[in-house]
Length: 430
Image (cartoon, rainbow, N blue to C red):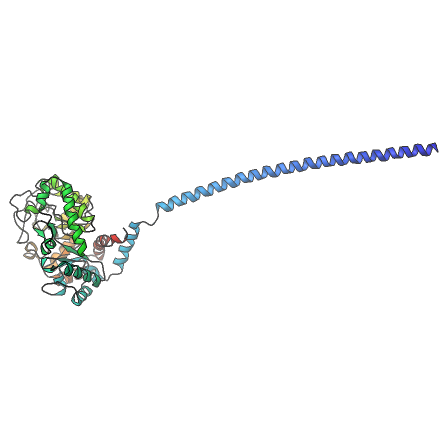
């Protein structure tokens, strides 16, 4: 009996020990599992932190690349200048050769319509512009009867043209004021009086006045200001049309005048390069010559033109004066001289705007050259537009033939049209 009890006690102890051992072992296993899970979580968190750092690094790099790309796109974004260049190229590219050549001429409405006095624009104007889509039309006092008539004529003329048109007039103020005199508007007065005031703001204001009323009627080009320096007191053709006999005074006045006029939306046309202020003769009546040297002209005559160029003048008129000291002794008119137009005005003074001749119907041209010959010479010299040839059809046909046979390259014509259309289309992107 005792042995059974002892055996039972020992067995219970063994069972209890086993139970306690199992519990201890289970605790140990649980502890190990807890430690293992903790280590696993730490590894996961460490891994996630590393991955997060990598992600953050990748995101930062991507943002840097996007910013860099944005900056590059900003630097190469499509600008108004790009839009204008594209519009100009498209316009020229759509033109026939005949239309391109016509676009180099700036004529009176009578020259394309055949009427004696143009005071309205109807079917005749429409047909004429379809046949000869000229680049510009210039109007004189005989074309102006009333404000309503003038406005209607110019509006209709524009509507009949398949291409943008320059509509110009000589409106200098003082003795040359076609519109102000015809319509009895207040005249801003002679430029000599404005120059004598010594106040460039007066020149600015005068041209603002002129530009405002010209724009209200539909004009977009004014053949002004006169940039000649009156170095010869006996010169009557220029006289009080010039601002001054002092080059610096004239330069400051011309610069302000150009700014004042063009801020109204009217293109300025400085005249008469290389300088008509020293001549005694009138190129309307025959040859007019200056004996001044290039050095003298650089110190005097060229200064107002340079000032106007720096002010952004859209157009410069080349005079018909002869300047042997600039042309190696030749009596060729400046308007037909490559040495003067391209060599001096373009290359030395850096002008890349529109160059237009003075009226080719003036005696300084007609006494010595046929209309077609003079037009071809002017374009080959570097002019972009031919103003009022004596015989427009002869001049037009002559230039067209010259381009067709290679005497004048079509590329040369396109260069001139690019300058012309850059001004004509500029307002579309401003």
